[in-house]
Image (cartoon, rainbow over all chains, first blue to last red; front, side):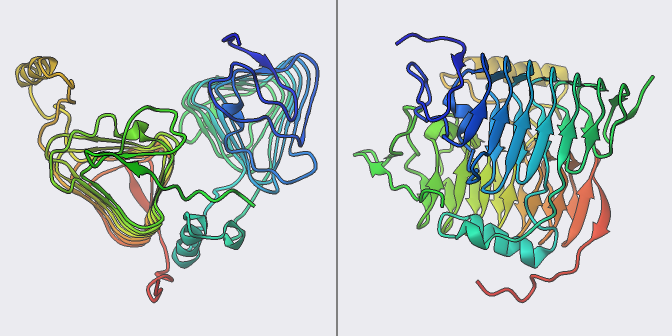
Length: 195
Length: 211
């Protein structure tokens, strides 16, 4: 047993030397030379689809939450570097190639709970330790698409339905609610273009 | 589909509860009273729980605390969390009273603090507090000027939101992600931004809900 910073990401395995006693799920497709720091990345991975996560080759995950709900599908390309981010997917999040995602970033394709007070209350009960998650309320899910060569700065938030165009730069601390065009640079809450 | 999350801990001779399979070698203190079917994923969040009250924290039926939710208290802090509420990776800093009602959701990164942590003091007073704290074995936070917080039933606090001292959030309200709120928020408000402003009122559809 040797403590290493990164281990190969292989479906259905547990990592020798991992500080977190978890396993890598079976229903993932992974390319060559993709690594992660710990199975803790999959602590909140619950996808029941045949393939809930597709990752390309040469991608790096470090202290990242790949949280996927029962019917969620997450796609990530080649040569991405994702450090200390939370990717929370209830239906579809797609990340291209050579995307850099910095610390504290949250990417979510849903608000996860209903706005209506009564529906929300029932959702809380369904989520509680005595509840049934299958009785959870239906909420809007809008896919998030992040194209190739995007850079997402620290503590930024990308919310449901957003497409970030190729080569765009999301400055640190941005909250992105609307599409970002290819090559654009955005900043602020809500994020706006800066030149 | 998911494994049952209900865990029952063992209680030692000092009344402290340990959580099975906890990665952190700590305890849930004796003065934390847990309702039935409570789930707490680690005792890590109680490492700075310094309250000396006989009952310093109450968690109702079917409450849950996920992912390093942290409770930092001074010797006088009192926290109450109502039935079915869950806190998911947030920080609650309490030196007076912080009360969460039933069916409350608090998302990751949110901070709820009921005292000014010396920000209300001048620099001389602050340096005094900091030097006093440096003498304490547990290096308590520099608590000052507390003012209780009440969060009523069925409130949803989004991720990275901050709830400042003295805030009351009315029933059914939503505090948007990354907002900073203070003062009195009337029931069924949707609040966003820093400083938080009300952008919408919700229909009180949950009014007749009977648990």
